[in-house]
Length: 143
Image 1 (cartoon, rainbow, N blue to C red):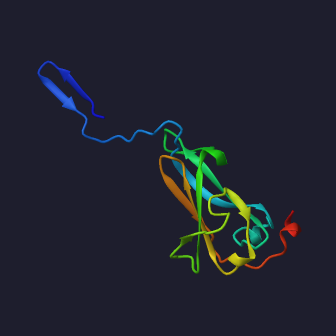
Image 2: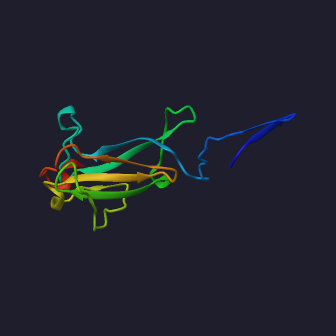
Image 3: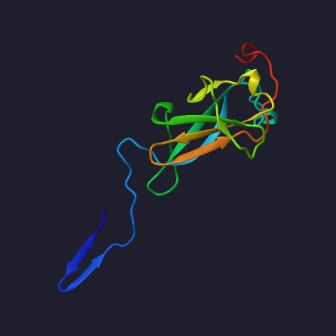
């Protein structure tokens, strides 16, 4: 898209590209992991355990460039990845959790790092665990 304005013999054209969001897409401002079910104490906030339920929270960017409304899970797509260390390389999960907004952390993820790539249709963002997943209780212990 381009814009030009003419006044008499003077014509000015916009030279800056402007991205246009597709209908139904969302520009992500902030994405972070959250414990849906599990130990919510401050000491355990960044330690995720097998048996706990992990999810993602994402906020839309406002027209003013600030944090807007929290987006619903059906407005986003998710790709969960796993790695042996926090810097990666990350690979997409190969089980039923690969594209869910939240799931119970499996024992097979213990010692690994999780990352979730969130797509709002306009841009993507990600959130990842700071620490490796640790062995926890059976999922029933956290409900």
